[in-house]
Each structure stands twice: as C-alpha cells, then as structure tokens.
Image (cartoon, rainbow, N blue to C red; front, side):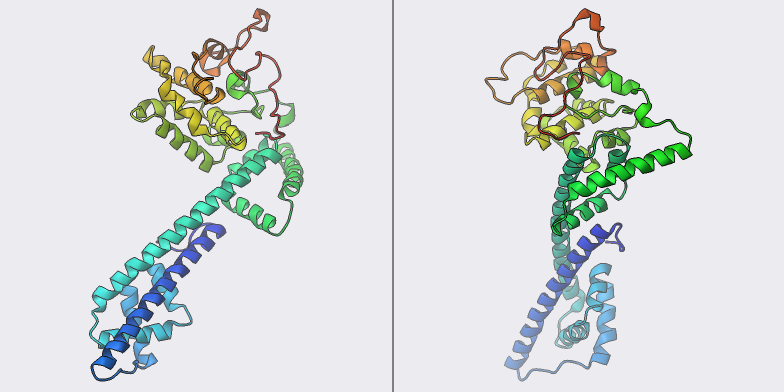
Length: 378
C-alpha cells in the first residue's frame, strides 16, 4: 500500500485500518514474548530484555525489511515501539528466526488491515449512496446538482454531509441554501464568460428526443447531453458508484449474454436507464427483481443484429416499468408504443395523430412529464 491516500475521508479510513493492523502485531508479539519467558523459566531462568539503545536500531532494520511500509511505519511511530523492539531482539536472542517469524506476523497485519479497510469502504460507500439520494430529493436537476455529483471530491462532500447530520444539523436545509448560492455562482460565471443563461436556453435535442416511457417521472434537465456519459449521469442525479452497481446488476441478470449486456450498458440511452433504476431504488423497489425479466422474456433476441441495442433498451424499459408478480407480468410485452416515442427509434410521432402510449406507467406523448408523487425528484 502506498501512502498518502487521496481524500481526507479515505485517509482517515485507511489510517484506522493500519492502526488495527498494528494492534494485531502488538498482540502477536505479546503472545510470543509470553511464550519465550515461560519457556526460559522452564529451562533454567528467564532472561532480561536487551537494553533499549541496543534493541531499537536492530529491530528497526528487521521491521523495515520484512513488514509492509505502512504497518512498519505505524509500529515504529507508536509510543510503545521501544518495548516492542526489545521483545523482537529478545526473541532473536532466544533462538527465534525473525526471517521467518516477521513475515508471518506481517501477513496477519495485512489481513487485519485489509479487512478493516474493506469494511470501512463498504460503510462509506453506503453512506455516500444515501447522501446521493438526499441530494436528488433536495436539489433539482441542473448545473448545481450536476457539479456536485461529478466533482472528484464528491465522496468527501458526502462525508461532510454525514458529519453535519451526526451533529444534529438538518442537511436538507443546508443543501437548499447551498443550491441557491450555487445557482448564483453559476450565473455569475456564465455572465463573465458571456454564456447564455441556462434557464432561458431551449431544450437540447437529447432532452426532446428522450421524452417518453423511458423518462416518465424523471427529473430531466433541459440541457441533457447523452454524448457525454459522465456528465449525463451527473445531470440525471446518478453517482459513479451507483452507476457501477447498476452495470453489475445488468450483467448478473444476463448470464451467458455478456455481449448483449455490454451493448445495453454501452448504449447512448444508458444514463436514462440508470436514472430510472436509481429512481426505483429510492422508492424502495428491487431493481434486480425487475431485470431478471430480460432473460425470461427474450423477444429482444429476435430481429436484425443492427437493431439489437434498440430492442434491448425497449425490453429493459418494459422490465423496469412492469410489476414483478408472475400473474401480473405473464402477458406479452407491448413495445410498439415505446418504439414509437423512444429516442432510439427516431423522433416521436406528430401530436395530430393522437397516438396514445399503452405501456404501463406511461403518459401520452407531448404531455408534461409527471413529477413523482412522493415529493422526490431526480
């Protein structure tokens, strides 16, 4: 492992892991020293520990050569290092092969360090995802939310939210105030750069073409840019950690269909699908339970290869919209309306044709995209 580690929360977590590993080393050395003393007493008398000034340089050379750098550094910088150095040298004088003993101790230390770090990472990731949900529910789609979620220090921002929460602060109120200030900053910078105000700009082509079953209930930004995946995910309120989890779920739901899963998650419309999954997750619905339908209803496999990606998108939209109960989900998937208004199939039909969308949970094309009934927005 290399020090230092990027980001204060990560450095703190890794520091805790290293400290835990040094505690494990202390325990092993204490046990070894106790065994040495008892064995010497049985064979004629316990020997005294070597002088500190003799033990320190000798033990330091052994530890630096045989333990990983971060654990070695933590051991030698601790207040009890002189006593530990005496124990190590006493073990060598008693006949213990430190060339064998110390690497074994190092393996124990590394195992403890990695286990604690992994546990801390899981806790931190869970908290970061939870604060992403709070951000989506509090801050509307736009430049402020996009900037926060796409920031390289987003995990640290989430850690700060957690710390405020732990101190009894209403983080939602702070976010609402930060949103207002952030809008002011965005507009000021825009005026300085002579850029048009986002609020007055016309919807982007991606935003116009995306209206339909795929985006019902989603908080769709007017300047949606599906050509820039990282930005599109941030615009739609999906963090990189969440996106990685959704990609994994798709691959797990499609065993033996790695190419098809790759086409789906690599499609231009994937950020919209990821936003739909994040919305479902916020509502307490199990996304994997819906994705399994991709292997139950494999109508997307039939047809020209050139249109496979579009069929996969339609099938995923249907799987995410429809209930998971077998009785309710046993009917055929209606995809004609979805194809008619999907961005993957070209521009939507003219309003004068009166086309109605019949898929579950959809609305007529051209009608305002309904807001979520729970008060959450994405």
